[in-house]
Length: 318
Ligand SMILES: Nc1ncnc2c1ncn2[C@@H]1O[C@H](COP(=O)(O)OP(=O)(O)OP(=O)(O)O)[C@@H](O)[C@H]1O
Ligand SMILES: [Mg+2]
Image (cartoon, rainbow, N blue to C red; front, top):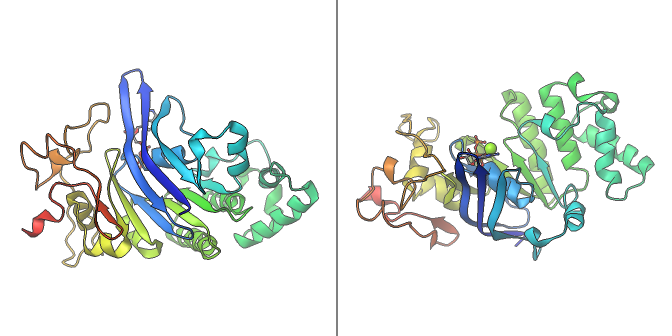
């Protein structure tokens, strides 16, 4: 197993209360496996992604859990040890490439720096930077541009080039294509897929479960800071067990046989004060008073590799 996340919880200590951004999240990613995280806005997909890299921004704090990457708990490493791993063994593409690019420096210097901080000589890094740009379909002269001279899609390709500098073992891609048109989106998905073909594991985040279906091996469904279902793409799409997963699938027209689009009624909860018991119970058609609002369901394996946290998994079937 490349990555094992165990019982990970992250809280944000804000002035108006403690936001339980993610709680008790456990899953694993095998070598060369693509796992896509889906769930409504605010469900904790980015929080978990940042926690894996141990870069949860203030006022957030990892309050419990382990992130075991190649048999080492990343949360126990020193800053120096983490620096060795970040950018080389684990790299990240952010939703907005401007968060990872310095607006005041030429992109070439930034691509080169990813390599020189890990000990590659400057000249060699410069050559390699040109090759990387070619790989992401950008002419090498773009190395002399500043980030603002490039389009959004080009900037995103630069950040992918940076992420590819070392053939990372794990790539975390947090909604890397949301701001881009469909053609550019496809080309970026192709680049991520090419990395996977070379053995990189992928933690991918999207709102769009249909985008998840196309390329990934597994799907992880988050709701209100909890991982509620995890399994292969087939298990999740053909045999969803959590009512929230079923609702997400029904909200996509193409995926649902009858072609009906049904929005999920209600709103995700305020994570300063999440609902008791199962966090989905106020919106759940199956919720049973005295159970679902009182007892938190365990996250359990119900068939090989298929996990769900629900008192009535698949319960709509009667
Ligand atoms: N810096 C922060 N300060 C306070 N609360 C935060 C902060 N960042 C995230 N949160 C809260 O943590 C919860 C999880 O947020 P997160 O950003 O992980 O969700 P997400 O699933 O990535 O959502 P999106 O799809 O909108 O990117 C939300 O309730 C959010 O309001
Ligand atoms: Mg996010």
